[in-house]
Length: 309
View 1 (cartoon, rainbow, N blue to C red):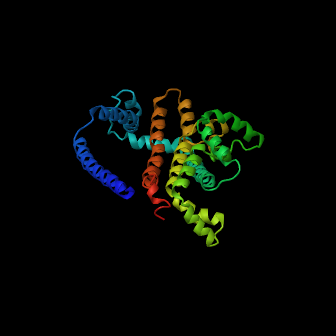
View 2 (cartoon, rainbow, N blue to C red; view 1 turned 60 degrees about the horizontal axis):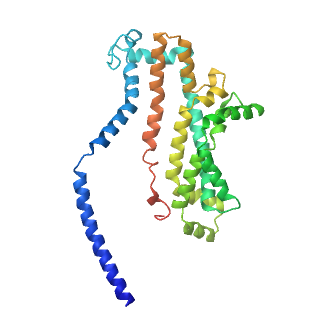
View 3 (cartoon, rainbow, N blue to C red; view 1 turned 90 degrees about the horizontal axis):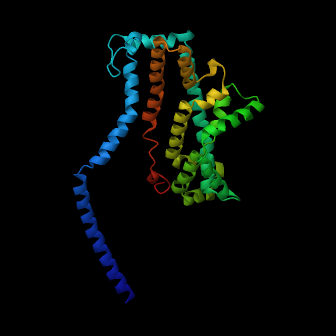
């Protein structure tokens, strides 16, 4: 009686589900043919809002000093202004822009790499181990996500000043090693992608906990780690306040602070504005290159985790 009832229920459930599925497919096909104009217009406005400043920078970088304020904002120039601005940028103050670019690469690559290692280890430990206080520690990290990083700049400066670590590369890299959001992301991804059965099998084979993280956990968490690296790289590359607080030597400036200082020095001169504009355009190129290089890795794909392994 129980089996029959169950079978009937299953059959009905299957039939309804199948019919619903077909109906759903038909509905999806019908919906696929329609265009949601409201959503499309909102997305177009958002895309124009994001892309328009970049387009203006590209166009403005082609103009000479005399054309910058005398021609239409979105009318490009073909009188060789782009290459003359580029030469002036790298020749300014004995090539200080190249030094700022190298500093930005050191801060961004070094800080993002170390931060990925620290946050990956912390997230893996919180996700795969249970120890005293781990739950409250994770809640504290989640709460720290809501804390604006700008509020920490002055306390971090005072702390590093006490240790004599200001005005050097460590002053910019050390405060950015720990990211609460990155730890949260790694913890959630470790729970979903690193299978407990795989780790238990490794323990039976005699692998140490560190070996399991290095050989198994880090590989299964690779999409999350690449995402953390990319986010940290972009965050450090664009960071302005922390270098502004920590550094006072122009030889240590990153691109953000260097270009800001160059803009302040200009005193409204058009000749210097063209250098700043072409400098901003050049500073975008590494970000675009890193994004295009890593975009196929940072797509969160839980299917490639422990289930597939």
